[in-house]
Amino acid sequence: MRSRSLVAHTTIAAVVSIILVAVLLGATFVVAVARSVEAWEAEETLQYRDRVVNQIRNILIFTGAIDGDAIERYIDPYLDRQHYLVVFDGTGRPIFYAIEGVPVVPSTRLSERLPTAAERTEHLRSLGIVSDLPGEIAVRDTAGTVRAYVLAGTSGYGTSRANRAFSRTAVTILLAGSLVTLPVALLVSLLFSRVPAKGTARLASRIAELPRGKIGPLDTPIRELATIAAAGDRLATRLRNEEAERRRWMQDIAHDLRTPVSAIRAQLEAIGDGVYDPSPERIAAILANVSMVQRLIEDLSLLSTLETPERPVVQRPVDLAGFLDGIIVRFPDIRRTDAIGGLEISGDADLLERALVNLVDNAHAYRSPADAPVTVSLARDGHDAVIRVSNPGAIPQESREAVFHRLFRGDPARNDGRHGLGLSIARAIAQRHNGALLLEAPGPPTVVFALRIPVSS
Image 1 (cartoon, one colour):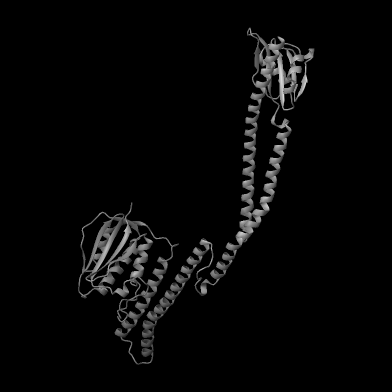
Image 2 (tube, rainbow, N blue to C red):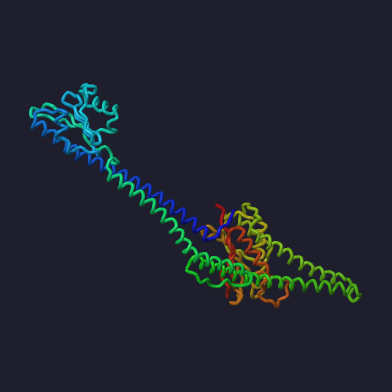
């Protein structure tokens, strides 16, 4: 897709908006004028018809008859190009026409009688005298006899010179206004777009420096740009923190690998130099260090897999009561403190077992006293199944935020082969099952971790 500058986008948007507004105003103007013309023609027709019908009645009163010559003589002040007048006598014979101010007394060719209003209307339309005729008015004498039929009205809005001048002026003003507005709007859009364009350019240059530090506050009147800058600032801080955590993680991994590898190497070199005998005990010590390295590598691989969202988790029904009982029998000093059954979730039983074993192993390692029992309970909380693992003891205040960090050990001085990935793996497993692992109680007297997994619907 071809990219454009913010100024170009703003200008295009302004032009399109102006065109749409001009079209809308033009359509509105045309509709308004059309309705105004219709209303004017209707009103003008009524007023003109009343005037000429009254005059024809006066002709009938004063002369006692209605004929074309009398109408032409007495009606002349009312004739103009803007109106038409058609008069039939009482038998339906046309006796007078006045179209656009020109009076005509019909010849014998047009003297056939048209006794019905429909015939009179159709006859005049066939001659093209008027385009649309309103209802005719019958003029009666004192005895009630119809002496004439009168059709009168306006010939159209455009037949008036004043009306035509007004229409031309209105159209000229509309077109001139549109032509003047377009360059003015373009100029205004260019001027106003300079502010966001400059702010966007500054923001882009600061984002380019994101890997090397904070973006910093952006001095701009555009609220959205300032919001983006603030979000970029938070992103920079997060990236620095993650980079620092990555470095610490790599250092911890190197340290955890260096110790057993160094021990393996030292013992093998000593055996090779004849300092140590390759006794079963010596070989067992070397294998123990190899197992430690292997566990660390396997746990790191599992954690990497769990933190990759593209890799799906196998979803199968898991009955939690039977699942817990199957794990508890493997640990003689674990007690289950509930009797709930019938809770079923959907997930990977192997991963869930790994998470629960990690929690139990962590409780064993940090319980106080060392022979205190570890308890496991199952409960339902709304839409979640909750497995709680509890042990006597306490987590120091300064360690409570870090217990789920990778390679975090509560007591770094302990040399028990633990590498600090158990809780990180357990939490990643919970999250892959749309659940969570929480530290519900840091102690004293009891430390409680809660594994929450949604119950199958």
